[in-house]
Amino acid sequence: MQDTGYSRGFSLVELLLAMVVTGVILTAVVALAFALKTADDVTDDMSEKQAQVRFATLRISELIRHCKLICGTPGNSLAVWRSDDNDDGLINTREIVLIERGIGADLLRLCEFPSSDTSTVNLSNITALDPDVYSVTYVTLIPQCSDVQFSLDASPPHTKLVSISFDLVENNVVRRYQINATLLCWAGNLLNTDGDALVSDDDWK
Image (cartoon, rainbow, N blue to C red; front, side, top):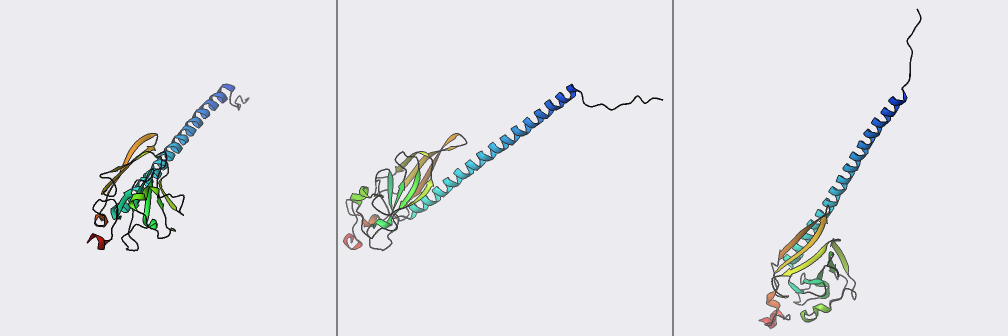
């Protein structure tokens, strides 16, 4: 008996159909991979910015809470007398920390003067404190934000409550954040009767 069975390959239609199915599957895999990568990037961006906000809140809250006085608002900054390191009852340059918001109110950072001499700074000329004159150290808290605003309950040096607000873009959504801090050790006893200069404890008594 003659064997009528035979082997045959795929027809052209079958090959085209297989290629179409394979293309659809590959397209779906690529789209899924892209979606997962985008979601991962969004998560990383939000995590990074949330970490920046937490770090900024911690540093600023601790600085304001334990400082002696809010001295003034030179330029776009908030001048803080963080402590009386040498216990002389005077504001030394190296004891000042500037909370800066940048010329365009688009960042938040600390400016310190650790290498400065022990020259004193008067409340009346705190606005003349120029970081370009001294050797300074910067600590960036929020590198990219917008509309940074300082709100004070009273004009320096009578300020006891500080509020710093700013906008931050997260996942293409603008969110408004606010950092509030209250002085616990306001050195009002070192101010003269007009509240515009420091006096020693002996002079005050």
